[in-house]
Length: 512
Image (cartoon, rainbow, N blue to C red; front, side, top):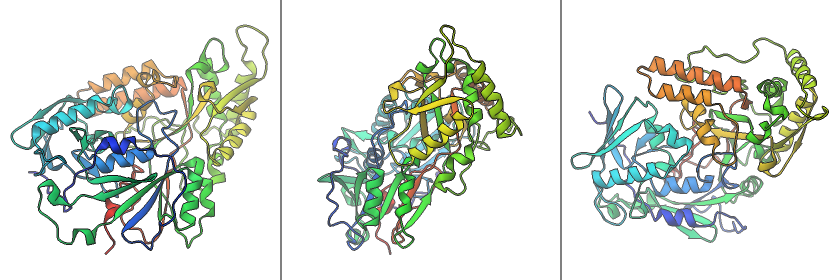
């Protein structure tokens, strides 16, 4: 039986090309914004452009939000991170978990063409092709075929069960286009450097009109800003919501008073740590040996690393895959058991002192690290300098990623399973610039897991893959990523969630 249709207006979007083409640079001019104007809600998103360490084509934060707002897919996320109907108003999953059958809503595409199974099939296939050679493409490699069935029914056939498929189909990159236009749920115009998003009245899609539509909805004005500017705008009352905050800008929130708003932390999982760059392992360099890379991981005092930020509830880990996720067999524990930090550092320091280059006289070990711009990177650097110094390794910060031996990775998982972590650190992705170190053996286990006959066998192979990746010491984990927002008490349509994803659509309803 099909799942019931959600009670929400139907949607469409303005041209996605317009949404993705406009400049996201902010040059001031927030005058006139504020909570007193109930016709619009002003939202700042922390946006410094695409993450230079990410090996995929994920859009910069503001463009991600615009893509999701103006080009929805079969399904979408609500404010709480739950999957809800979008172009598909209901769906079923077969008992073997290898077929998802979606029934499309009645109506049309933005240009007036009917929304049919065949037009949706073409749009889905196009979106999948556009992923190219990215981690998200690898996450979706279980899709075997997309079929147009009778009328408005589309089937996605899988070559293996993918319990997280709906979460992936709700990603912005899986938003669907038709003749260059997105499928909603909002239309975008530009006001200077600000994106103005408006809900589309349902009758424009050939759907029943909703009474008092204009009195029930409001515009959302999206301001892409650097972290300090976003916090400053919030403190000045020029925006009521700041989204997308990361660790490097968390120190800016110290200026936010209790009466101005609330700091909200999303309960996300993902990768937060240091990636070893492939260039650092060339020839006879210190990082060419897995044991030396492990020495760096052993030296880090993880709780002390985050202590300067005062983040309550942060969970440190020495594992690559966040512990206790669905499918975690529990056979991989924290590294080095009950070994005290000082004992670990003593062992790591002995490795540093014993290391000799193949040619030339030994000298002090000095490494270069890349960290993102932002005030929070300074305390991170200071702690890492102190930690590595305890084992005789010097550390300096470099502005150019291509010159770095180590680089900070800070990425939220798109779905809470081991496969995401292993795909994100795979050799397939290491081929992309910047080139990073990887483990072919771990990739082999992931490939075998994709062909596993049972969920138990798949989980066992992914556990082996994590063990291979851990032994290679290509990534030095710190713990869970940190994602924060500033939310004024008057804001409706916002909720913390496991994906750190906050859609604009729920914010466009006027509070009752």
